[in-house]
Length: 463
Image 1: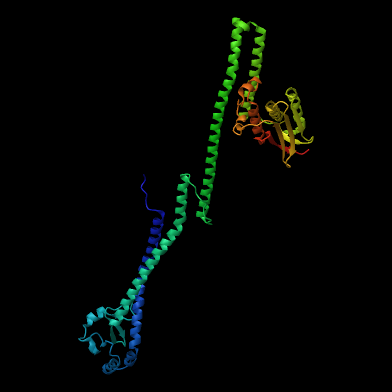
Image 2 (image 1 turned 30 degrees about the horizontal axis):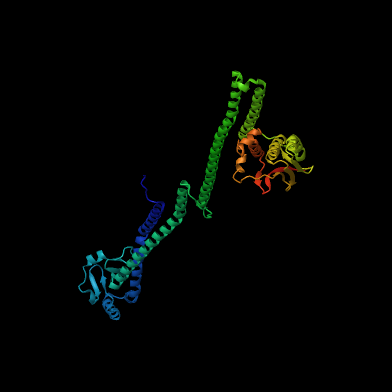
């Protein structure tokens, strides 16, 4: 199993956070010197404002008055610590709080002019005249301000880092949530599990989700179609096995019977000596077999979709009349009656010969299954602008509901002995079903309580 690496959320979060930290670091490195300069400039400005009265009083005064003026200023500002120096070594005045006068060279090494860029270590130097300078001590208050400034800077930096981490997390989550959801959906799709439609997003991720879902729907429909096609093929194979098995049985028995008759005649045994009688019997059996074989071939042609209907405008009444005429001798022999109620001007769009074949089988099946002196009704009616319904009803016949669907199967006969004696192959309604399927005509065969009703809906043509 492949080891899973860092997820997309972690990657985007780390990349975003790293970018923000680099930006913050570059900004701090670039502005660090400016922060110190600004702070020192502000502190030096405070020193200038504090000592401005003293500087104004000392300007233009001789050295002998410097100490007096400085002493007077110190008495008014006891918290200040400073000293005044002439040249590089002469101290003109020094506040008592400074103690021993600092070494001049050390002091100058630790101090810079207020106007300079670098902050002083312990003193700020303010020039008064060409040879007199005021040295101002950095007070603890000033250091405290600097420390407070550093603390605030660190706090601001920490807050900035927290905001950066939070922003990176929010950004990463906003970017990765739909992607992770899409990844979860595709995993379910790969397992052929149910996946709900994606949310409506108007961006590239939304477009990607819609396209993936559409592809999933098409794939799912294709799989269903393939499964249905496989099922249909399996059913066809099963039907073919059943059909050929039944066909072989139907053909085998009469052939075996005919062979017995012929062998008896060849051996000149008993009653088989009457050759003309049994030759006629053999011919009759072969004629029946020839008819059965023709029907088998017709079923095969219809099943293989090799029959292409010839669509034409057909008058329903004119197509039915020859069928009724051919069945009339059997109807009269059984003392039956046929009531036909089809208007003269009902036209439909179909193949005339195939429709005649269907009507012949349906009407003949109704006549054969109607008791003697029974009634058969045939009527047609216009359902709407697009269809015509034709009905065939044989009265006095009732079949079990379990038997009705089997009547459409090849070689199925409810009463096999009686049907065989009447020369019925059991393929009539099978041919009807195959033909109507080829013509795409819906039909049904139902019990009504008084008899069996066959009906089909033909596509209508205007008269």
